[in-house]
Length: 125
Image (cartoon, rainbow, N blue to C red; front, side):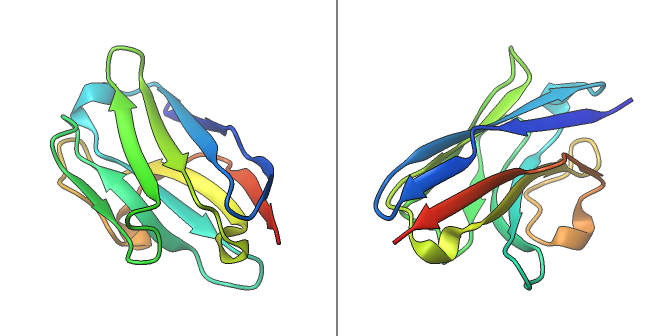
């Protein structure tokens, strides 16, 4: 059974930083690309960042490029999202997700198959 568990969310002041973590189990982790997506209240879920199965390729949405960094630790089955310079419009539930094994970078929400329950990030101004 595939299980993705996010952690690290919380309340942060604008300009601050957080490190989100995603722990995966039930899959051959090193063969899966992983993505972070977010959903703000009243809005559709949107792509934030993705990292290829081997960590060689990454992709970011324009809204977070230069502020967020995705990384992975295949030895421990974890993916991280370093969130710097947060803004109030970064407030959202953040989800990690994965698509088919050995898929490339996935940037559409519809491409992801397995999802975690999410971790809430709230940015105060």
